[in-house]
Image 1 (cartoon, rainbow, N blue to C red):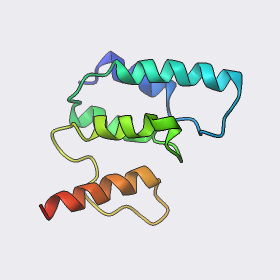
Image 2: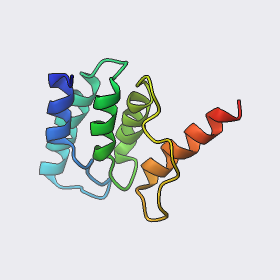
Image 3: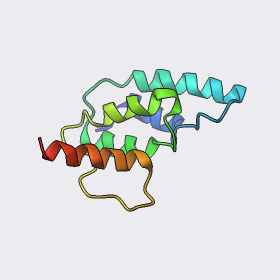
Image 4: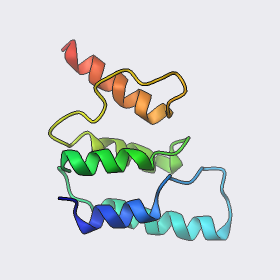
Length: 105
């Protein structure tokens, strides 16, 4: 089951906007996405995590991408358990690296 808060964030933030977007519309969208992301309570389900990883953009989105990463990692199972291709989104690669590092603990 996917909660309405997750659907709302996905609707607003797929993908997260770039930090280079300095438009007024971008500022308004960022504020709305920030509120929507913070409305999602941890932990997320595996199904929600799979949907949320589609929202990563190309940069940190003023820290919002890190918040999203920690939210995705709250799922019961790691969302990325195999090495992504070389042209994968940096955040998917980061999730893979973090998963791989957790195996050596």
